[in-house]
Amino acid sequence: MVKSKISVGQMFVCFPKPISDDAETPMPRVWVKVSNSTVDGEEISLFVDNQALVRVSIDRNARIGINEKWHITDRYYDYNVGRGEFVPISDLNELDGICEERGCPYYEVEL
Image: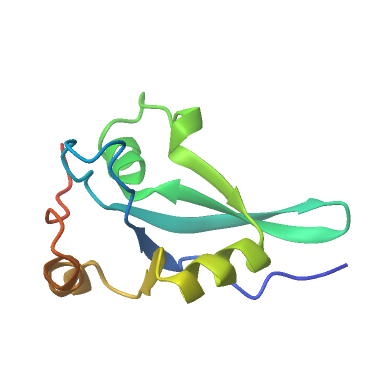
């Protein structure tokens, strides 16, 4: 079996692209690895949107929606890190500087 190199708790910020030239720049999203799954003998990482984790932490009746989960292979993760689409972070305090560098809206947790 091929084990994942990404540790549980690893976070990355993803910068979605605008849908069209005149659209607003979408808010960055922070994803947190919460577990591994095995598919065809390969471990894949389950990442959950940080906003969803906050919501579930506050409200025990809240659920994580299908668009707030993302199964990612190590290859896909490494490919997007290399392209700059994913920026690994170890602390949410790093986001202000990263957002400023990219000229994108600042990340905010909505409660």
